[in-house]
Length: 322
Image (cartoon, rainbow, N blue to C red):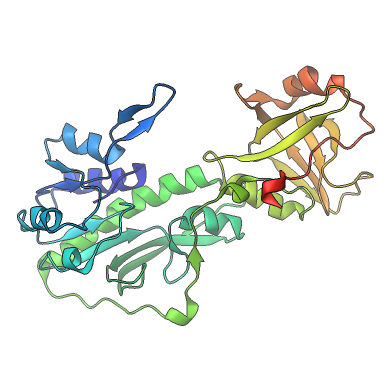
């Protein structure tokens, strides 16, 4: 059971390993995507169809028919990774060897929907994968395998996602082998150490330049490449603002910036320098809304030559974020 690329990595590894017969794949219904709003299958569905595996896409498991359909497959194990639907107890009780989840954190830390982004946002230097037996509570079940992964100081959510997805697939195969060879003894989580990784919101994507520069760096890389980290730039004299997406760059702490936080300080080493609370952040690439990413030099030539360099340029957060 799964939907996005993270889950497809697990399914691919299980199919390639021959660790067991995949009797069916459950994935969320096809969603409209792109300018034409055409319905597109999830990465998990596409992979399943490539390998001739039957695909099921119920809206939920609130009906007896949906539960009975799954039960008719008589699965020994339910392997779940980023499925995106809550499974009722009637579903969790179906497999004789249990329902198992591939979770992208070192449980009990970062239970919930966005463990990868929340870990980077919090400045963690370590995360991992946990194979956990599912129960009614959100990511509260006992742990079968737990493996650590370091987070690089400049690593973004995209590269960390890919590393964790690959590891998750390997650990899922290992877990299936353990379940097939005998009884297992998963370890209970210490609930007192639990933290919650809430789903990302619009507020999470906004760059607050009045924060410490390390915090700004964490936010930009946590939101990269998707959904992206954004700020708005005011253009004096033109009565307009432009919305910009930033990619991770470099920063200098303790550098005196003779300007309030949020001012564009010019170019240095081909990067756009912006003042923060305790230093300067340097952006290598920027994407104006509706356009492609451009390097900082091209952006500066195209936009900043039009403004007064002595004025603060970056707008405060939109009113709905305050």
